[in-house]
Amino acid sequence: MIPSAPPQRVVKRDGQIVPYDRDRIETAILRALASIGQGDRRVAASLARDVEAMLASAYGPAAAPTVEDIQDIVERVLMQSGRAEAARAYIIYRHERARLRDARARRIEATDNIPYRVIYEVLRWNLDHECASIADLNRRIAEGRYAQLVRDVEARYEADVRTAASRIIERRADVRLVIVAGPSSSGKTTTTLKLSEHLEAAGLHLRALNLDNYFFDLEQHPRDEFGDYDYETPQALDIELINRHLTDLLAGREILAPRYDFTTGRRTLNVTPVRLQSDEILLIDSLHGLYGPLTGSIPAAQKFRIYIETLEQIRNAHGEFLRWADLRMMRRMVRDAWHRNHRPLETITHWHYVRSSELKYIIPFIGEVDFIVNSALPHELPILKPRVWNVLPEAIRACRDEPRRQDAYLRAKRLYEWLEPLTTVETDDVIPRRSLLREFIGGSEYHY
Image (cartoon, rainbow, N blue to C red; front, side, top):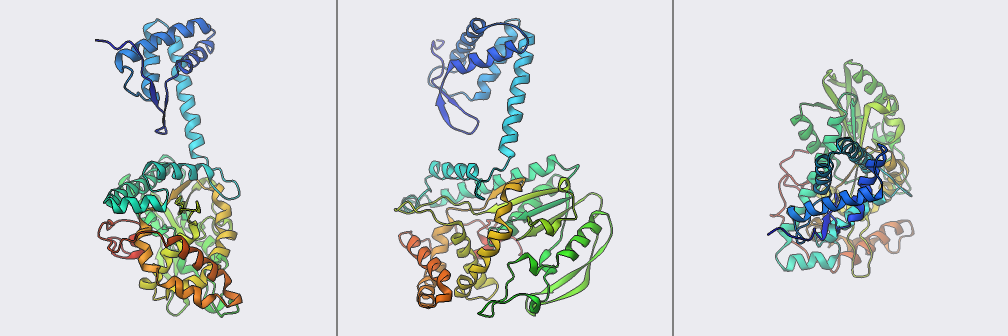
């Protein structure tokens, strides 16, 4: 028996389910007819009823077809009614709408350096996957659903990287330099490795240039009143030499790249021969990759700029969202402790350098990038907490009465209070060996 009623719901392109509305079909048909000087609202209404009848036959009231499904039926009805020219006009209209949607989706709009559209999508994803609050995370852990959250979050991040790679592939004829940039501990290294895998699978050969080797000797770096060196400013890099080498590489000339020894804090010039072949793309993973002067010698059309940030949208019982910088500081505390032999307390007290540099040289350029990768992993918080928890009270005590350490005191206190009600996950067995989180907690299949 053929259902007599059309579907009551429609699945939009972004996954939202909305009520079915025949008027939208009628309006789209009217526009197609008007574009060729045919028909009026009455004709469009009649054709929309034919579309509705076909929808009722194909789906019935209980199903939820997609917008694309409905548009396919509109084209079929127009053809079957003898309006081939109107069908062609509708196809053109449909294609143009898709092109405009794609252009909007690719445009990074930032107000006050905040990509609000991207953040809204992150928040909605977290709500849909029950990880938008500490209470959500605690409940998933208590109910044994933490492992599924790990799988879902990892898949979302991998999809982001895959999309970034596809955008580069689309521009393969023009792009000569791919820049992966973002603030400290946003996951640039892992993201670059994964991006490289996707591009290599598409036949694009990559050549990485490690800008860490372009640091000036440590004795040339500025110091603060505590005697700390500042690695976080782009002025710590030999920008003039970087541009000269970029220009030479893209022109097919060989360079001799320097080598920097972080143990001694000294650079040796003219060490590593590097040449970019005609079928290779130069790849830069740099904290300051978006800073204009760093790659000023390369035309914008030859660059593809990716920005990575922990766009986390998780709040506590008071509605306070975890700050992105605080999440990244936790990551760096953990990584510095096992990888760079730095005490986590040193990471906290040094963090004012990190934030100062980010606010000047990284975050202001977010509206100029070609793609944003969200590297926040909601499942990482229960894993990171036990690794930093005991350090935070120590930082609070050490910095509370020191006027020059108030930034560290307030940050440690804020993070301690936010993390306190969160349930911890003591073992990392459920974290995949290729997860971005492994860049910070160790145990990765990748070699950093």
